[in-house]
Image 1 (cartoon, one colour):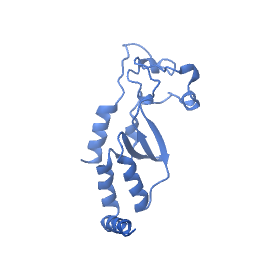
Image 2 (cartoon, rainbow, N blue to C red):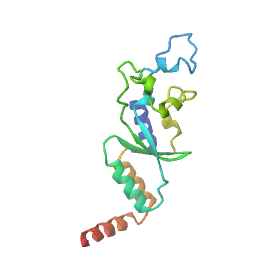
Image 3 (cartoon, helix red, strand yellow):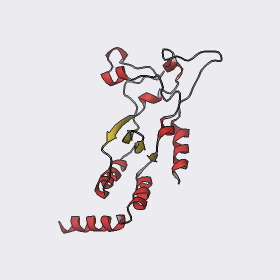
Image 4 (cartoon, one colour):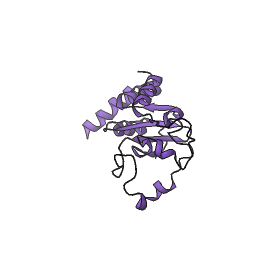
Length: 158
């Protein structure tokens, strides 16, 4: 599967549903009320140190071996994408702890958010899972197979 195919599939499954009546002007004050799937509260991202070596990518492969973990690179760097909804997200999309929400939630701005454009539109690279990253790593590092064999032999030797 090519990168563009992965982005298209990701967009289909993760895009924001908009429910805006005709003639209503969307503002930062009312925008969240029209976002019917609270996309911004269904995942977290963690910035990564830019992976450069085979060992760095080996570690990233381990991370993508876990359920609901993906990775992407955009103009700001590399990130883990952890698809896991906030425990306090109510069925109607509102925050169940709004008055006591953490600082990061308070600082979040919806000036330009996924209601306006899917985040994946800004991804330079996107890795859905282990196999997608492995394919990339094997192409990026011509010596990947030798690295993997040597790594495994060293582990076996103790």
